Amino acid sequence: MEYLHASLILHSAGKKITEKAVGDILTAAGVTPDKNRIKGLVAALADVKIEDALKSAAVMPTVTAAPAAAPAKDATVPAKAAAATPEPEEEEEESGLSSLFG
Image 1: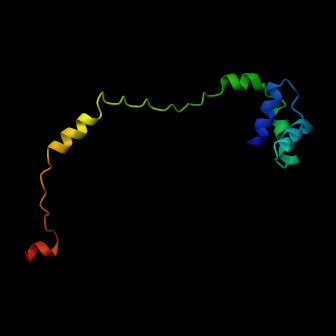
Image 2: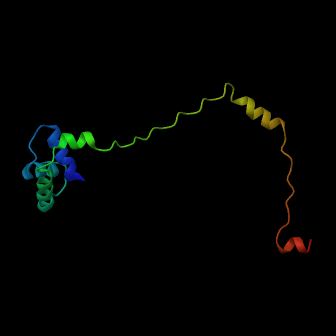
């Protein structure tokens, strides 16, 4: 992926995509360049019009955060109402073998 990014940096800077230029960018980024991969990338991009490829590329969907729910006007009202109405106690149902021997 770094190799492709390096070529896109060169393209956006208006520079020619060469093996040396891609290698220099990778080295500057702290990546040990693989000369065979660089050679293959430069050869593959030789006949590609990058600007046209970028325009016709599928648009990546972006993830947006859902809006936060609006807080209640008075957040203490629901708490007071919940405290005023006691919850009915639930009886534990016996299950399994213990229900047989009651």
